[in-house]
Image 1 (cartoon, rainbow over the protein chains, first blue to last red):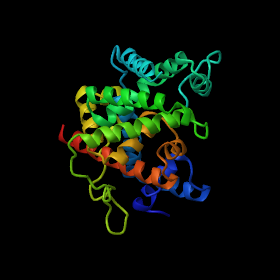
Image 2: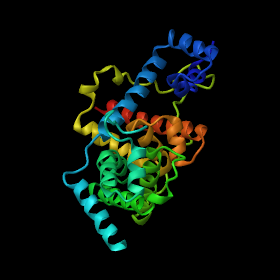
Image 3: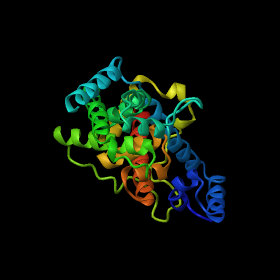
Length: 79
Length: 202
């Protein structure tokens, strides 16, 4: 049986599903009896999702046109 | 990871090849396809709207100048993100630098025998995400990400915000897979700790 430190040391690979079946079973077994680690895993997963939502913003209006114009100017100068 | 392309639209690679043959409209299409993703990466790295737009301009200008250098060994998306990452790092170097944070000790603290947490994790993640993500929390998350050292921040943004795979991040940044995994895990732990602090103080 693995303890909290050992189980959470494999957390990223556990969530990526890249652990061997034996290692994965050890983590699953530990999570089945440790509410603190379950809370930790949930907060780790929530962090990933919250990062994505917090930083998800579209480019400002007009930025694309400004970039395209800049590249056009460069293209004209160099041709 | 490629941007979403309808089946009747040219692939990223086809657009690059056409642009290399002088079809400027195809390069413009690439700009439109990647503008939001490049902007998000640039904004996450610089934390400034104005600086992010400068980075986006530098990125597409550099891509255009070096169109011929793209030989197709890597995915187009990896090429674009690599140029964007370099443009962001260059821009940050010109700005005032903050002292580098060490993430070596960013991990949960366990008792000596590893059997329990010294500071048990909060259970804030049980709340629905819609409730969790307030404007204030969004600002906290941005601030925590901004504190990460640049090379860690890049990995977190590419993997968790842009949704690249670990392998794609390694390819984009020219680093090994174990390095990606290590930087990603430490970055996530650091941001998770910041969130834990935030929810404890509420």
